[in-house]
Length: 207
Image (cartoon, rainbow, N blue to C red):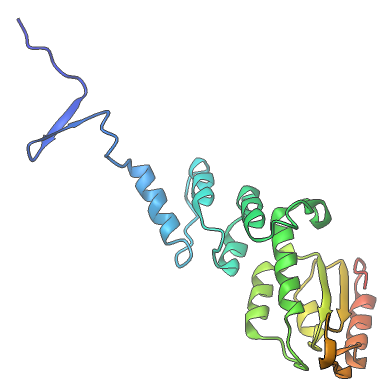
């Protein structure tokens, strides 16, 4: 008679029997996915990864990932839909106004918020905004601002946004109250000249 062999057993290690149905053992693919996700912001590895694993990686990425990194390396619309639902729940149902693209929706709203917070009588755009524009320029077709309290150099912006089709900017501040400052309202002649020059050079833009 031969002793019955337990086929579930794989091997013995330090006196502990490891079995094929031992769920405490992390699969190598799961471990690799976890490490890629953990370090994606500083080391955005994506080349050479089989497509069947890429979706699992993007599904696990956090919604507050550095937008500059996300703009360059993430194209999965599922990720951008999730991110928009978390960060912009009110606008999440308006994808049809942003080319039916969740990535486009995210960055057009993201840049709108930056512009509406643009401070005072500054002319030079903060480096952070220009860096983000460089990363997401392919995803921006509409530039809007319902309030623009400053007078940024529009030439710095428009020359980066080669896909822009609509520019809709309102110079002024909402709910200003007793802090009214005439300088915060209205376009300057330099801004008008910049928009006019860009409009004449463009075949698609509407200002």
